[in-house]
Length: 190
Image (cartoon, rainbow, N blue to C red; front, side, top):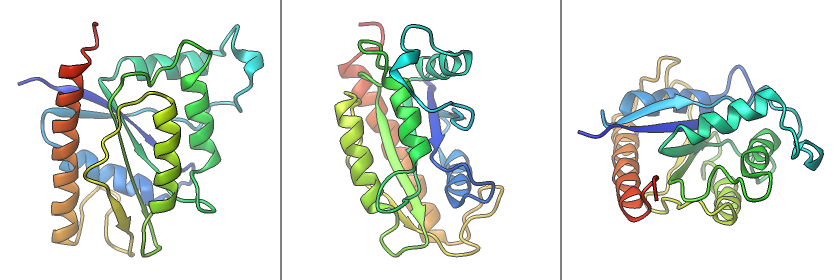
């Protein structure tokens, strides 16, 4: 059995983030072949091209954490019909300087939750466009827009609704299968 390291980003800095609850659930529901590790984005300064010649230590550590992963998972809220600024900032750090894009050829998935009935559909659409530009092979099926309701997910990641738990388990199973397919086609050491 091959275990794949999946780094995940929670696109919210809020201490009460429902997307962090979703991340906890995904960690619990992932198949044993996926080892999920959060890659924090909280301490990254605002990206500026002025840093390209000498990244600050926090940004170097961030890029190193991504490099050590086989795949990445974006767990995003939706702010003003798009992705949060902190998540876009993290993507900018990871994809720069030119020619050192941490996401190139790295399989990725996108998921998110919101109290709105369409979940984070619009934010995910924007995020998919950004990731395509970053040359990150993107799992496009199964898409996952989770309508969050109070009590749906506990702080420990337990999902109270059985059909939602099964959907999320299936999402993680599909993510595993996608990672395997991409890494067969685009081996990391190639």
